[in-house]
Length: 349
Ligand code: SF4
Image (cartoon, rainbow, N blue to C red; front, side):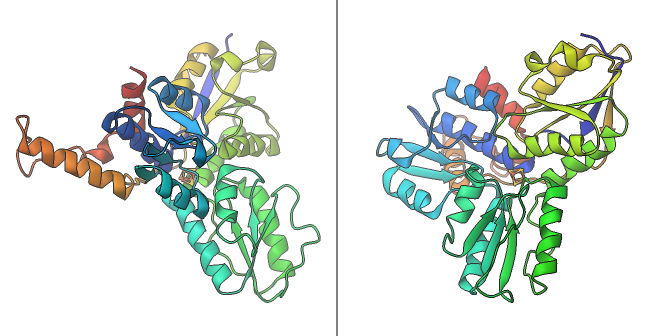
């Protein structure tokens, strides 16, 4: 396989929510003996899930699959209230790795429902994030698929309608639903911009710009990753041939017929070494180039309950033989500099 050039989108791959969730689960595997359980895939990426399974993490889809007293992590996508309460009743320790940007939408749902709004939630039926969010106020919410739009949706009161969204939608699809909703319900309530997160919009912006410069777009990410699938649709909507691949092994030689320049990006849960392997497999004769559109600085701290565990560990070590100097930075203070990629190296070593 050979092409002339590869343009690599930046930003791509891990977002702040995924960074936090992967590091949090890595900590869990280091702190607790025996299997650590995780409700739903920690993030939607096959390689990441296999790596954690390799160190004994057990992923479950129902809380009753978790043995009583086992340590349990809840995934980055956010969980339904009954899942959180069921988990708390069953597991000895529950750490919720929900992304704060998903939590924000959960809060919006609760507030709008409490204020008597009919809520239109634009999202993908059955996706973990959508399931968890809708469960916050099921009787007040109507889920609408972004591709199908509002259809014949009728609220109880057209003056009290709110519009919320899954964080990882295609921006263009979301905007089509939003424009229609604004037209139909002039007093529509929604968050100031939208619920789509910075990582979703930044990665899609980069692909839009990249698409104009290449002959084919490849998106690294797993089939159940909503933001990965959105990247493929964005590229196709901009007239490009585009394919999702889990890894370099999925590239079909026929895709490269007549292709000189390949644009390459990755969904928010795809590890970067998979992107590097794709570049190697494409063996570009003129090399690869970074296509940077914006620099991301976002950082989400570890979940509060996990932070208190780590603090206790730090204090124990301070009190022991291998004490760090009091006042010197410990693991928690250095978390911002520790990346999920380094955490995965620990897990897959
Ligand atoms: S894609 Fe967005 S909402 Fe999802 S984990 Fe990443 S930052 Fe959070």
